[in-house]
Length: 321
Image (cartoon, rainbow, N blue to C red; front, side, top):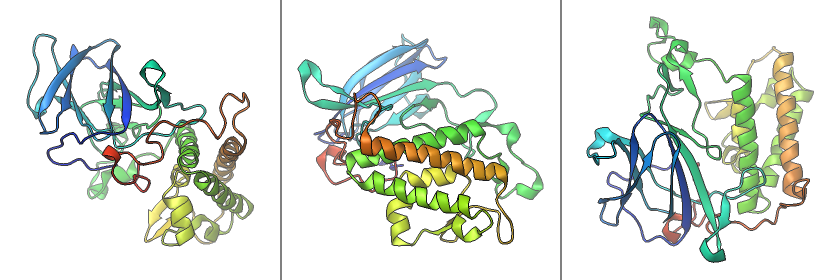
């Protein structure tokens, strides 16, 4: 993710984005502030709890602050901050994950970012061990799943990294992660035609080799320094599929156990096979469009979806998003 400056301020925006934020927290209101060009917060409105919705057209590179509070009092100080948000790029739109709409008065297509602010349930944290003030629900760019603190081994044997013992993804979480990663490859192809398709086909080749040779660890080990691997797997949505399947980064490699002399279990072979099916569907969508013919690979993308976003300066294509 992009790292925010210590004192963010708005840049002269050239690429518009439409925001839609829902308040599902227990706070009476969430107050919304735009951070101006000098770094000052300017109050723009409030979102009532119980499903209140706030909408705003803003620009890439314009920071926003969401603060908890009451209707009769505007909060100040870092202790009241729920979320600091800056749109850094426009998300390409693809079938099943639309992120674009016409601007006002049938103007140009603009990008949409929708998310919901929610309370973090008691006893839950992020897998990294962080305890966020709120949880952001976003179906397009989802947050990492929450996990129960009771699933963390805090015994003396794991003092250095107690989170290493957190359970792996559940079957549902793994399926969701693979689905999102396949959508990301479709987005990459929409923003840069041919890139996502190349990644998906290369990934299919790797997964097919794993299924055909479950007793050969060499097919489950990819050198991240390899140029082809870096360009088509590591820096694309394809890496998300591998991580969801249990690949881990270790000493310059992406690898999945078990090691030498051991064969993948039937369950893990089936997981890889199911992932192949999901990736194959993405390849078909990229090449042929969806079955309804409402969308195809030539769908009009919102302004900025090609990666030229942040206030119109530079290309965001290499960013990990």
